[in-house]
Image (cartoon, rainbow, N blue to C red; front, side):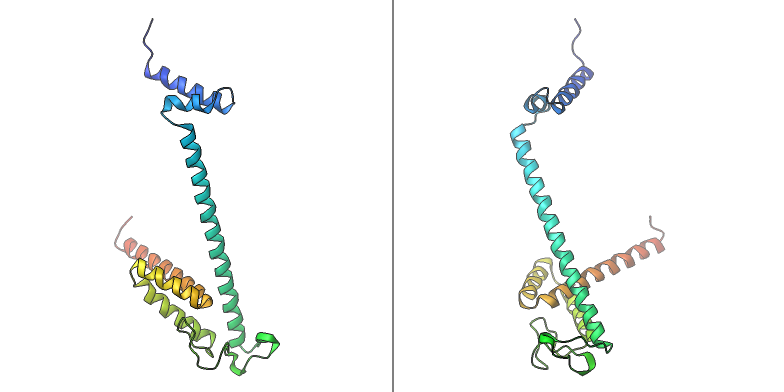
Length: 183
C-alpha cells in the first residue's frame, strides 16, 4: 500500500468542502482538516457583516450630508442671482440675496458671518477646510466634531471642500509624477 501524498490530502480537503457546501457533511468536519474552528469563523463572519453595515450606514449619512450641502449651495446661488425664494416662515429674503439667519453681522459658530453671499460663504468654508487639512489628524477630527455640533451646515460644506482639496492635490501629484517620467 502506498503512503498518501500531498495531492491526496488536497483532494480530500476539496471533497470535504464540496460535501459541506452540499450539506452532506457538517462544516465542522470540512473545516477541521484546515485547522479552522467553525464557531470562531461564524463569529468572525458576523463581525465582518456588522462592520460592512456600519460602513454602508456611514457612507449613506455622508451622501445625505453632501446632498444637503449641494442643495444649500444651489439655494444660496439662486438667492445671489436675484431669484429670491422666500426666507424662513415665508418672509421675503433681503435685497441682494444675502443670508439672514440671525442678527446682521452675527458670526456663526463655524466662523461664517450671517448676512454673507453664497460666494463669501464658499470662500470662507474653503479657508476653514485648508486650515483643517494642515492640522494633525486627531486635532482635525476634534475640530470637525466641534464644528459639526456648533454649525452642521458649515461642517458639511467644509467636509466637502476638504474632499475637493484632497482630490485636487492627488491629481496634481499624479501629474507631477507623470511629468517626471514615472509609471
